[in-house]
Image 1: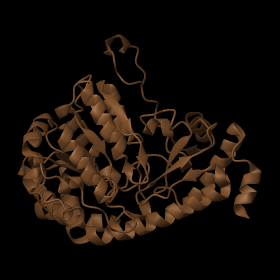
Image 2: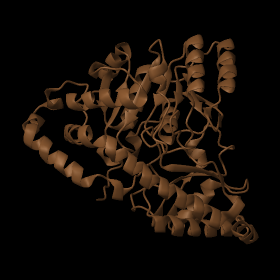
Image 3: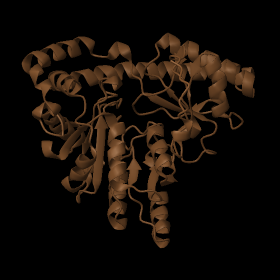
Image 4: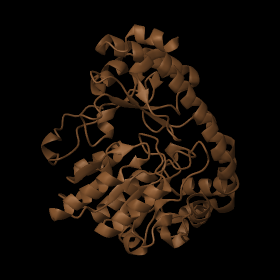
Length: 410
Protein backbone atom coordinates (compact mmCIF):
# COMPACT_ATOMS: atom_id res chain seq x y z
CA UNK A 1 0.00 0.00 0.00
CA UNK A 2 1.32 3.45 -0.90
CA UNK A 3 0.58 6.66 0.96
CA UNK A 4 0.85 10.30 -0.04
CA UNK A 5 0.89 11.46 3.56
CA UNK A 6 4.43 12.39 4.68
CA UNK A 7 5.19 10.91 8.10
CA UNK A 8 8.92 11.76 7.95
CA UNK A 9 8.68 15.15 9.73
CA UNK A 10 6.90 13.41 12.62
CA UNK A 11 9.62 10.86 13.38
CA UNK A 12 11.55 11.69 16.56
CA UNK A 13 15.33 11.98 16.52
CA UNK A 14 17.26 8.85 17.34
CA UNK A 15 15.07 6.28 15.61
CA UNK A 16 16.92 3.27 14.19
CA UNK A 17 17.47 3.21 10.44
CA UNK A 18 14.42 1.97 8.51
CA UNK A 19 14.20 -1.76 7.89
CA UNK A 20 14.28 -3.10 4.35
CA UNK A 21 11.35 -5.18 3.17
CA UNK A 22 11.58 -8.89 3.94
CA UNK A 23 12.59 -10.83 0.85
CA UNK A 24 12.92 -14.29 2.41
CA UNK A 25 15.81 -16.36 3.66
CA UNK A 26 18.89 -16.80 1.50
CA UNK A 27 19.28 -20.12 -0.33
CA UNK A 28 22.13 -20.92 2.07
CA UNK A 29 21.28 -19.27 5.37
CA UNK A 30 23.91 -19.29 8.13
CA UNK A 31 22.43 -16.35 10.06
CA UNK A 32 20.38 -15.87 13.19
CA UNK A 33 19.61 -18.32 15.94
CA UNK A 34 17.34 -20.56 13.88
CA UNK A 35 17.35 -24.20 14.88
CA UNK A 36 17.09 -27.58 13.16
CA UNK A 37 13.51 -28.00 11.92
CA UNK A 38 13.95 -31.77 11.71
CA UNK A 39 14.65 -31.88 15.44
CA UNK A 40 11.65 -29.76 16.40
CA UNK A 41 9.49 -32.07 18.56
CA UNK A 42 6.41 -31.43 16.44
CA UNK A 43 4.34 -34.48 17.38
CA UNK A 44 5.01 -33.90 21.06
CA UNK A 45 4.04 -30.24 20.79
CA UNK A 46 0.82 -31.13 18.94
CA UNK A 47 -0.06 -33.59 21.68
CA UNK A 48 0.82 -31.04 24.37
CA UNK A 49 -1.28 -28.34 22.70
CA UNK A 50 -4.31 -30.62 22.50
CA UNK A 51 -3.87 -31.69 26.10
CA UNK A 52 -3.38 -28.16 27.41
CA UNK A 53 -6.33 -26.70 25.50
CA UNK A 54 -8.67 -29.50 26.51
CA UNK A 55 -7.62 -29.28 30.14
CA UNK A 56 -7.76 -25.52 30.68
CA UNK A 57 -8.23 -23.77 27.36
CA UNK A 58 -11.07 -21.65 28.69
CA UNK A 59 -8.62 -19.91 31.02
CA UNK A 60 -7.36 -18.10 27.90
CA UNK A 61 -10.33 -15.80 28.49
CA UNK A 62 -8.42 -14.28 31.42
CA UNK A 63 -5.24 -12.24 31.06
CA UNK A 64 -2.29 -14.31 32.25
CA UNK A 65 -4.57 -17.34 32.66
CA UNK A 66 -5.26 -15.94 36.17
CA UNK A 67 -1.76 -17.08 37.18
CA UNK A 68 -0.45 -13.57 37.84
CA UNK A 69 2.04 -11.34 36.04
CA UNK A 70 5.02 -13.68 36.55
CA UNK A 71 3.67 -16.31 34.18
CA UNK A 72 1.93 -19.66 33.96
CA UNK A 73 2.50 -21.49 37.23
CA UNK A 74 3.08 -25.03 35.82
CA UNK A 75 5.81 -23.67 33.53
CA UNK A 76 7.49 -21.89 36.43
CA UNK A 77 7.24 -25.11 38.45
CA UNK A 78 8.95 -27.01 35.63
CA UNK A 79 11.70 -24.38 35.52
CA UNK A 80 12.29 -24.62 39.27
CA UNK A 81 12.96 -28.35 38.85
CA UNK A 82 14.99 -27.94 35.64
CA UNK A 83 17.19 -25.15 36.96
CA UNK A 84 17.96 -27.08 40.13
CA UNK A 85 18.82 -30.24 38.17
CA UNK A 86 20.78 -28.70 35.30
CA UNK A 87 22.26 -25.45 36.63
CA UNK A 88 22.31 -25.93 40.41
CA UNK A 89 20.00 -22.95 40.93
CA UNK A 90 17.78 -23.17 44.00
CA UNK A 91 14.85 -20.87 43.40
CA UNK A 92 11.09 -20.84 43.89
CA UNK A 93 8.30 -19.97 41.51
CA UNK A 94 8.27 -16.50 43.08
CA UNK A 95 11.85 -15.90 41.93
CA UNK A 96 10.90 -16.56 38.28
CA UNK A 97 9.22 -14.44 35.63
CA UNK A 98 8.21 -15.73 32.20
CA UNK A 99 8.96 -13.25 29.40
CA UNK A 100 8.56 -13.05 25.63
CA UNK A 101 11.94 -14.51 24.76
CA UNK A 102 15.29 -13.50 26.20
CA UNK A 103 15.15 -10.26 24.21
CA UNK A 104 12.35 -9.02 26.46
CA UNK A 105 14.45 -10.12 29.42
CA UNK A 106 17.27 -7.91 28.14
CA UNK A 107 14.90 -4.98 27.70
CA UNK A 108 13.46 -5.35 31.21
CA UNK A 109 16.85 -5.61 32.90
CA UNK A 110 18.15 -2.62 30.94
CA UNK A 111 15.05 -0.53 31.65
CA UNK A 112 15.36 -1.31 35.35
CA UNK A 113 19.08 -0.57 35.74
CA UNK A 114 20.30 1.72 32.94
CA UNK A 115 20.07 5.32 31.91
CA UNK A 116 21.87 7.25 29.18
CA UNK A 117 25.57 7.67 29.91
CA UNK A 118 25.86 4.60 32.16
CA UNK A 119 28.66 2.07 31.73
CA UNK A 120 28.37 -1.72 31.44
CA UNK A 121 30.99 -4.43 30.98
CA UNK A 122 30.69 -7.00 28.19
CA UNK A 123 32.63 -9.83 26.67
CA UNK A 124 34.52 -8.42 23.68
CA UNK A 125 32.66 -10.72 21.30
CA UNK A 126 29.03 -10.95 22.31
CA UNK A 127 25.39 -11.15 21.32
CA UNK A 128 24.42 -8.56 18.72
CA UNK A 129 20.94 -8.11 20.21
CA UNK A 130 22.46 -7.00 23.50
CA UNK A 131 24.97 -4.64 21.89
CA UNK A 132 22.49 -2.89 19.60
CA UNK A 133 20.12 -2.25 22.49
CA UNK A 134 22.82 -0.53 24.50
CA UNK A 135 23.88 1.61 21.54
CA UNK A 136 20.30 2.89 21.24
CA UNK A 137 20.16 3.59 24.96
CA UNK A 138 23.35 5.65 24.83
CA UNK A 139 25.18 3.34 27.24
CA UNK A 140 28.97 2.97 27.25
CA UNK A 141 30.09 -0.64 26.67
CA UNK A 142 33.53 -1.74 27.86
CA UNK A 143 34.65 -4.98 26.20
CA UNK A 144 36.80 -7.61 27.93
CA UNK A 145 38.80 -10.02 25.73
CA UNK A 146 37.98 -13.73 25.71
CA UNK A 147 40.16 -16.81 25.62
CA UNK A 148 39.24 -20.49 25.37
CA UNK A 149 37.68 -20.28 28.88
CA UNK A 150 35.57 -17.18 28.27
CA UNK A 151 35.97 -13.68 29.72
CA UNK A 152 39.50 -13.04 30.97
CA UNK A 153 39.44 -12.26 34.68
CA UNK A 154 42.85 -10.55 34.72
CA UNK A 155 41.65 -7.93 32.23
CA UNK A 156 38.31 -7.63 34.03
CA UNK A 157 40.09 -6.96 37.34
CA UNK A 158 42.30 -4.23 35.86
CA UNK A 159 39.33 -2.71 34.02
CA UNK A 160 37.20 -2.56 37.17
CA UNK A 161 40.10 -0.97 39.06
CA UNK A 162 40.62 1.60 36.31
CA UNK A 163 36.92 2.49 36.15
CA UNK A 164 36.77 2.84 39.94
CA UNK A 165 39.79 5.19 39.88
CA UNK A 166 37.81 7.39 37.50
CA UNK A 167 34.71 7.33 39.66
CA UNK A 168 32.78 5.00 37.37
CA UNK A 169 30.74 2.12 38.79
CA UNK A 170 29.44 -0.11 35.98
CA UNK A 171 25.79 -1.07 36.24
CA UNK A 172 26.45 -4.73 35.43
CA UNK A 173 28.87 -7.29 33.98
CA UNK A 174 27.10 -9.09 31.14
CA UNK A 175 28.35 -12.58 30.38
CA UNK A 176 27.27 -15.63 28.39
CA UNK A 177 29.35 -18.12 30.39
CA UNK A 178 27.89 -21.44 29.20
CA UNK A 179 28.30 -21.87 25.43
CA UNK A 180 29.30 -18.30 24.79
CA UNK A 181 27.79 -16.50 21.78
CA UNK A 182 29.53 -16.35 19.33
CA UNK A 183 32.67 -18.25 20.46
CA UNK A 184 31.07 -21.39 21.96
CA UNK A 185 33.37 -21.45 25.01
CA UNK A 186 32.35 -22.56 28.51
CA UNK A 187 33.67 -20.64 31.51
CA UNK A 188 35.09 -23.10 34.07
CA UNK A 189 33.87 -23.12 37.65
CA UNK A 190 37.07 -21.59 39.02
CA UNK A 191 36.76 -18.58 36.72
CA UNK A 192 33.10 -18.19 37.66
CA UNK A 193 34.15 -18.03 41.30
CA UNK A 194 36.68 -15.31 40.47
CA UNK A 195 34.01 -13.35 38.59
CA UNK A 196 31.74 -13.53 41.64
CA UNK A 197 34.61 -12.32 43.85
CA UNK A 198 35.29 -9.33 41.61
CA UNK A 199 31.58 -8.56 41.42
CA UNK A 200 31.37 -8.42 45.21
CA UNK A 201 34.63 -6.45 45.59
CA UNK A 202 33.52 -3.69 43.23
CA UNK A 203 29.78 -3.78 43.94
CA UNK A 204 28.85 -4.57 40.33
CA UNK A 205 26.12 -7.18 39.70
CA UNK A 206 26.47 -9.97 37.17
CA UNK A 207 23.97 -10.33 34.32
CA UNK A 208 24.15 -14.02 33.33
CA UNK A 209 22.69 -14.93 29.94
CA UNK A 210 22.27 -18.73 29.88
CA UNK A 211 20.26 -19.04 26.67
CA UNK A 212 22.49 -21.67 25.05
CA UNK A 213 23.36 -23.67 28.16
CA UNK A 214 21.16 -26.68 27.31
CA UNK A 215 23.18 -27.40 24.16
CA UNK A 216 26.46 -28.71 25.59
CA UNK A 217 27.99 -31.60 23.65
CA UNK A 218 29.16 -33.44 26.76
CA UNK A 219 25.85 -32.97 28.56
CA UNK A 220 27.85 -31.65 31.52
CA UNK A 221 27.99 -27.99 32.43
CA UNK A 222 29.37 -26.03 35.40
CA UNK A 223 26.86 -24.66 37.90
CA UNK A 224 25.30 -21.37 36.88
CA UNK A 225 26.98 -18.26 38.25
CA UNK A 226 23.64 -17.52 39.92
CA UNK A 227 23.88 -20.84 41.77
CA UNK A 228 27.41 -20.06 43.01
CA UNK A 229 26.75 -16.50 44.18
CA UNK A 230 26.42 -16.16 47.98
CA UNK A 231 24.97 -12.64 48.01
CA UNK A 232 22.23 -12.62 45.34
CA UNK A 233 24.12 -10.25 43.05
CA UNK A 234 23.27 -12.16 39.86
CA UNK A 235 20.38 -11.72 37.45
CA UNK A 236 19.96 -14.91 35.41
CA UNK A 237 18.05 -15.23 32.13
CA UNK A 238 17.29 -18.19 29.90
CA UNK A 239 15.12 -19.25 27.02
CA UNK A 240 13.35 -22.12 25.31
CA UNK A 241 14.36 -20.75 21.88
CA UNK A 242 17.41 -22.97 21.41
CA UNK A 243 16.16 -26.08 23.24
CA UNK A 244 12.62 -26.23 21.79
CA UNK A 245 11.79 -23.55 19.18
CA UNK A 246 12.78 -19.90 18.70
CA UNK A 247 9.43 -18.81 17.24
CA UNK A 248 7.62 -19.68 20.49
CA UNK A 249 9.22 -16.57 22.08
CA UNK A 250 9.33 -17.84 25.66
CA UNK A 251 12.15 -16.94 28.02
CA UNK A 252 12.54 -16.39 31.75
CA UNK A 253 14.29 -14.30 34.38
CA UNK A 254 15.54 -15.41 37.80
CA UNK A 255 16.19 -12.43 40.05
CA UNK A 256 15.94 -11.22 43.65
CA UNK A 257 12.54 -9.75 44.52
CA UNK A 258 13.83 -6.19 44.93
CA UNK A 259 14.82 -6.28 41.24
CA UNK A 260 12.02 -8.56 40.05
CA UNK A 261 9.35 -6.27 41.50
CA UNK A 262 10.79 -3.33 39.56
CA UNK A 263 10.87 -5.32 36.31
CA UNK A 264 7.28 -6.45 36.85
CA UNK A 265 6.25 -2.81 37.10
CA UNK A 266 7.82 -2.24 33.66
CA UNK A 267 6.33 -5.35 32.02
CA UNK A 268 3.17 -3.61 30.86
CA UNK A 269 2.30 -5.97 27.99
CA UNK A 270 -0.58 -7.72 29.81
CA UNK A 271 1.44 -10.94 29.87
CA UNK A 272 3.56 -12.99 27.50
CA UNK A 273 1.85 -15.45 25.14
CA UNK A 274 -0.20 -17.77 27.34
CA UNK A 275 -0.84 -20.56 24.85
CA UNK A 276 2.91 -20.97 24.29
CA UNK A 277 3.45 -21.23 28.04
CA UNK A 278 0.69 -23.83 28.40
CA UNK A 279 2.05 -25.95 25.56
CA UNK A 280 5.63 -25.78 26.83
CA UNK A 281 4.60 -26.78 30.34
CA UNK A 282 2.63 -29.75 29.03
CA UNK A 283 5.46 -30.84 26.72
CA UNK A 284 8.52 -30.17 28.83
CA UNK A 285 7.61 -31.91 32.06
CA UNK A 286 7.58 -35.42 30.48
CA UNK A 287 9.83 -34.87 27.44
CA UNK A 288 12.44 -32.13 27.93
CA UNK A 289 15.10 -34.33 29.54
CA UNK A 290 15.04 -36.83 26.65
CA UNK A 291 14.55 -34.28 23.85
CA UNK A 292 17.64 -32.17 24.51
CA UNK A 293 20.25 -34.97 24.20
CA UNK A 294 18.76 -36.00 20.86
CA UNK A 295 18.84 -32.39 19.67
CA UNK A 296 22.44 -31.83 20.73
CA UNK A 297 23.53 -35.07 19.06
CA UNK A 298 22.02 -33.91 15.75
CA UNK A 299 23.53 -30.44 16.10
CA UNK A 300 26.95 -31.91 16.79
CA UNK A 301 26.88 -33.81 13.49
CA UNK A 302 26.05 -30.58 11.65
CA UNK A 303 28.98 -28.84 13.32
CA UNK A 304 31.25 -31.64 12.11
CA UNK A 305 29.93 -31.17 8.57
CA UNK A 306 30.55 -27.41 8.75
CA UNK A 307 34.11 -27.78 10.05
CA UNK A 308 34.90 -30.40 7.39
CA UNK A 309 33.47 -28.16 4.66
CA UNK A 310 35.50 -25.16 5.85
CA UNK A 311 38.67 -27.23 5.93
CA UNK A 312 38.01 -28.56 2.44
CA UNK A 313 37.07 -25.22 0.88
CA UNK A 314 39.23 -22.74 2.80
CA UNK A 315 42.15 -24.84 3.97
CA UNK A 316 44.28 -22.92 6.46
CA UNK A 317 42.59 -19.62 5.50
CA UNK A 318 39.70 -20.32 7.91
CA UNK A 319 40.68 -20.51 11.58
CA UNK A 320 38.30 -21.53 14.34
CA UNK A 321 38.14 -23.11 17.77
CA UNK A 322 35.75 -26.02 18.05
CA UNK A 323 32.79 -24.82 20.17
CA UNK A 324 31.75 -26.86 23.20
CA UNK A 325 28.08 -26.71 22.26
CA UNK A 326 25.43 -24.49 20.73
CA UNK A 327 24.58 -23.64 17.15
CA UNK A 328 27.32 -21.20 16.07
CA UNK A 329 30.89 -21.34 14.78
CA UNK A 330 33.07 -18.21 15.10
CA UNK A 331 35.47 -18.13 12.15
CA UNK A 332 38.57 -16.00 11.55
CA UNK A 333 39.52 -15.33 7.91
CA UNK A 334 42.75 -13.64 6.75
CA UNK A 335 43.14 -10.01 7.80
CA UNK A 336 42.47 -8.60 4.33
CA UNK A 337 38.93 -9.99 4.38
CA UNK A 338 36.34 -7.40 5.42
CA UNK A 339 33.35 -9.51 6.46
CA UNK A 340 30.97 -6.54 6.20
CA UNK A 341 31.84 -6.38 2.49
CA UNK A 342 31.90 -10.18 2.24
CA UNK A 343 28.37 -10.24 3.66
CA UNK A 344 27.03 -8.16 0.76
CA UNK A 345 28.84 -10.14 -1.93
CA UNK A 346 27.91 -13.49 -0.40
CA UNK A 347 24.26 -12.49 -0.10
CA UNK A 348 24.19 -11.63 -3.79
CA UNK A 349 25.41 -15.20 -4.41
CA UNK A 350 22.73 -16.70 -2.17
CA UNK A 351 24.70 -17.13 1.07
CA UNK A 352 23.88 -15.18 4.25
CA UNK A 353 26.43 -14.82 7.05
CA UNK A 354 26.74 -12.72 10.21
CA UNK A 355 29.75 -10.38 9.83
CA UNK A 356 31.95 -10.22 12.90
CA UNK A 357 31.83 -6.46 13.64
CA UNK A 358 28.13 -6.75 14.44
CA UNK A 359 29.01 -9.19 17.25
CA UNK A 360 31.87 -7.35 18.89
CA UNK A 361 32.74 -4.35 21.01
CA UNK A 362 36.00 -4.03 19.00
CA UNK A 363 35.23 -3.59 15.30
CA UNK A 364 38.87 -3.81 14.16
CA UNK A 365 39.45 -7.05 16.11
CA UNK A 366 36.41 -8.64 14.47
CA UNK A 367 36.61 -7.16 10.96
CA UNK A 368 37.78 -10.44 9.42
CA UNK A 369 35.59 -12.67 11.59
CA UNK A 370 32.15 -14.09 10.91
CA UNK A 371 29.55 -16.13 12.75
CA UNK A 372 27.98 -19.13 11.05
CA UNK A 373 24.81 -20.79 12.35
CA UNK A 374 24.96 -24.49 11.46
CA UNK A 375 21.67 -25.59 13.05
CA UNK A 376 19.19 -24.53 10.39
CA UNK A 377 20.71 -25.61 7.03
CA UNK A 378 20.81 -29.27 6.04
CA UNK A 379 24.12 -31.12 5.74
CA UNK A 380 23.97 -30.72 1.96
CA UNK A 381 23.18 -27.02 2.24
CA UNK A 382 26.11 -26.57 4.62
CA UNK A 383 28.52 -28.16 2.14
CA UNK A 384 27.13 -26.31 -0.87
CA UNK A 385 26.86 -22.99 0.96
CA UNK A 386 30.45 -23.10 2.23
CA UNK A 387 31.66 -23.88 -1.30
CA UNK A 388 29.79 -20.83 -2.66
CA UNK A 389 31.11 -18.68 0.21
CA UNK A 390 34.69 -19.76 -0.53
CA UNK A 391 34.29 -18.89 -4.20
CA UNK A 392 32.93 -15.43 -3.32
CA UNK A 393 35.74 -14.93 -0.83
CA UNK A 394 38.34 -15.94 -3.42
CA UNK A 395 36.86 -13.62 -6.03
CA UNK A 396 36.50 -10.62 -3.69
CA UNK A 397 39.61 -10.96 -1.51
CA UNK A 398 41.91 -13.51 -3.14
CA UNK A 399 41.47 -16.05 -0.36
CA UNK A 400 41.53 -18.93 0.02
CA UNK A 401 44.38 -19.49 -2.39
CA UNK A 402 43.78 -22.68 -4.33
CA UNK A 403 47.25 -24.00 -3.49
CA UNK A 404 46.41 -23.80 0.20
CA UNK A 405 43.34 -25.95 -0.41
CA UNK A 406 45.43 -28.57 -2.17
CA UNK A 407 47.94 -28.59 0.66
CA UNK A 408 45.16 -28.90 3.21
CA UNK A 409 43.63 -31.89 1.48
CA UNK A 410 46.86 -33.84 1.04
